[in-house]
Amino acid sequence: MNGKVDPLFELICKQPKLAEQYSLVKDLCHQFKPFADENFEQELELQFVSRFWEMYLGCAFLNQGFALIPRKDRPKAGPDLCIVDKGVSFWIEAVAPSSGEGPDSVPDPETQNGLVSENNIVLRFCQAIKSKHEKQNEYVANGLLKESDPFLVAVNGARIPNADADQGTVPYPIQAVLPIGLPTVTIDKQTLQKVGEGFQYRDVIVKKSNSAVPTDIFLNPKYESMSGLLFSGVHPFYFREVSFKSVSLLHNPLQKNHVPTGWLRAGREWWLEDHHLNLRIINPAAS
Image 1 (tube, helix red, strand yellow):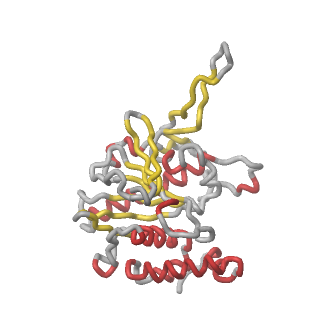
Image 2 (image 1 turned 90 degrees about the vertical axis):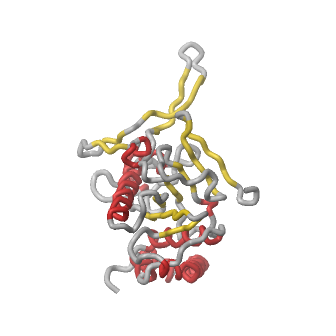
C-alpha cells in the first residue's frame, strides 16, 4: 500500500475506547462493499474521514430504501454514488475538506481563545464545492454523466475545526453557496429595543491575498447543473447510527435537473424561496 496511513484510522484501530466505533465502521464496510471502488478499503486507511463519509452516505441511502447502483453495474470512473429513482439517475460526489494550509486555513481552536474563524471555514467549503463542480463538468465531457442527470455535491465538515459551531444560525456550507453572512440585529434608536433581526448580505469573502471568492454560486447560472448540496458533520468516532438524521439537503434555486422536494425522506431540507431561506425537518416515521 502506497501512502501514509491516516492517523485517525490508526487511532480507531488501536484505541480501546473506540472499539465500538471500529466495529461499526467494519459493519459499514461490509454493507458498502458491493458499491465501493476496488481499492476502497486501502483508501479508507489513507483518507479515513473522506472515504468514511462516502460509505456513510451510501449506507444511509440503502437504509432509507433507495436503489444504490453497485459499482460493477456502472463505469469504474465517475462520481462516488449513483442512485436510480423512478428511472432517473441521481449522481453524488462526496468530499470532506480539511482545515487547509496557508494564511486562509482554519487554525487550531486551542490557539484562538474561543474565537471561531468563520470566513476561513466558509472558504474551505467554497473550495471543496467548486472543485466538485469542476469534476462534474469533466464527467459530462467524458460521457460518464448526462447533462440532464441530477448531480449533488455531498460535503462533510468533520475535518474542519469548529465547522459545527454555527448551530442555531445558517450552517457554513449554505454560507458557501448563498450570500448569507453573520447574524444582524436592528435596534430602535429611541427605545433601544430590538425591532428586527436577519443576516448580512455577503456575496464574496476576500482572502489574505486580496483575491475575492464568491459565496453566491447558487445564484449564478454557471452552477445550474448542480442540483443541490448535501452536508453533514458526522464523524467516524462519534456516530451511533447510519441515517439521514444528521444530513441536510439544500436545493439549488437555479437547478435545471431537479431533485424533488422531500427526496431524502428524512433529515433537514433547506430551500430558497422569495429571497427567504426555509427549513423543514423531515421525520422518517411521518413521511
